[in-house]
Image (cartoon, rainbow, N blue to C red; front, side):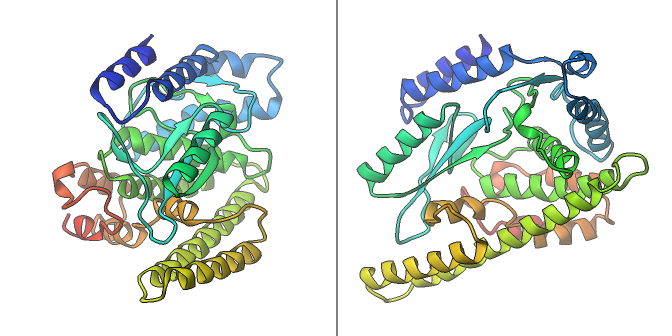
Length: 338
């Protein structure tokens, strides 16, 4: 009912979104919450696979660890929802084809955001295709295993947050801590800052917690460390592709020449990363939203004496007015001023 009420509020407050989008968001959230069960009962349920029982039993410890390092105590992750699908939501992003100018949507509460989330994959892909055709945009659709409702609801642990490999414990902790950072601090209209802060803090905390005595089983720490390092290398390569293409778009070449060079660089990227998925501006702009502020946060952490709790206290003094403009990609001057 709260989700439906929120949808009504948003529909009344914003003319930028259709009733159909808001209805699917409300319906999806209600369904997700309705199928959730208390974490303790899922852990005790003999039909819950032992591996899942163990991972879920450690969630309260993950939360407590994060809270001891400055994250806001919440009632999140006290329940579990088995979604029986590969993703929690499907994220749609769009961008101009010859410039890194992402399409943005406006929410009365969250401010502007460079993505939309759909609970139904077909609806997400249909909307993306409509954007591609009607607005001549590069579009990207990807599944996301988790998201934060920013305190509007008690977020449950989702089955999509639990992987199959030996690195599952590390990634579950990283996800819980990442989303908990969003619950601690969220600046409307500053997606790169919000996601970069959450990634930075969660990466640091996960490494410490997972290395604590008695937490990880044999091979779990190594598996997560290797997977995280591989992911970081992949993101760095994607960021490099963004910078290479940005230089092309800013050049004096003709549109035809830019399009040709874009095709060459994206083909090289796909071959190097050995992936089946195609990349475009929307994909690269999406990855650019994450992990862009690492150096600035590292400098702030050093000034904070290596104490993440002190870093969080510092960034919590920030307000929307602290940022000279919305959706800043380079927000390092804001962080360096703290």
